[in-house]
Amino acid sequence: MPQLMPLNWVFSSFMISLVVVSACLIYSEKIEISALNNGTNSVMNKTDLWFW
View (cartoon, rainbow, N blue to C red):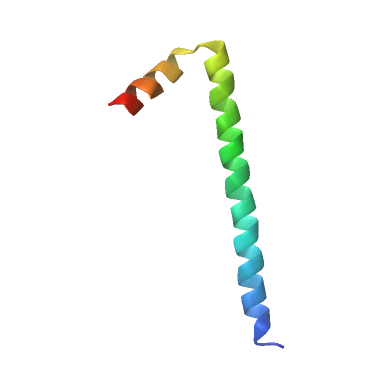
């Protein structure tokens, strides 16, 4: 049983990191959507970079 503890800790930390990364992606998508709704110039620059 003691040998399984490090694996469980790595697995739990990996799951927590996945949740944090997904939350950051959702948060950034919400920011981009709100910027699109506001019609800011920064979003236009981002789209120009994407087209290039």
